[in-house]
Length: 297
Image (cartoon, rainbow, N blue to C red; front, top):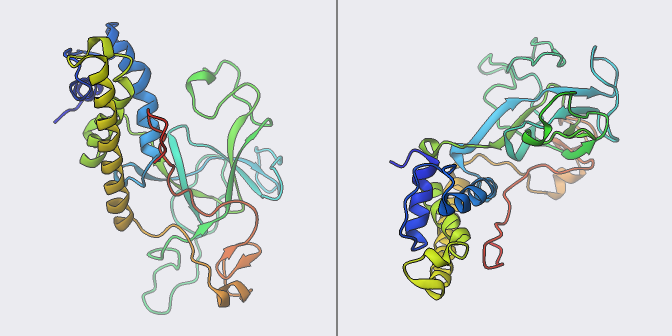
């Protein structure tokens, strides 16, 4: 099994027709330099391109702001119309959704609201009503807030979502929010086989022209190999979207007339059946992937 970024890079060099092997992406050779420039960006884009099972993470968010003023030691500055501002996880590649399920016993990050665990029990099993139930998505919005700049001395250019002029925040009306998101997965040993194959082809398509002079098939052959690798990457990502989509739990709500008219018995604020109907999005889905030939998939 290929277990290092250099191993993935070498597979991509093979696919691009480059007769060269790197021992480390930071070794300084021409192929290593090209791979190093493309590798991180390709990895991040590909993680956003499908709801990969292996990259799914579920973590409690760190509270930055509470507009109600009920939480000590946090700001009250939250962009309207939301109640809470949370720190964007620095390993989050794609925020999938934030569940409405309040009362989940997941532990409280330092400074977050501590909600009572005295929850009504179901009549059937005696299990708290938030446990074992489907995670129902709430509305959220991602934005930049100048009220939360990076701390003095922070190496902000190396931390996602941080800058001296403001930070990326997640705005929500959910207390003690938990995020379900696609996590940055740098270790190939954790990758799904479909992801590994797609990464090799995607990376090969990106490096084919920069390394065309080193290709055993020449510049024209390198262009043909780039096209071939793009098609392979598309096929593998398409298959992965289907497979992972079938294995995932639902993260979106299908609108139904009778539910749209219902205004009681739900969770959240300004609820539409069981979800709120305010500004923002329910789920992140996955992104289209921009490929080296200018096509989008």
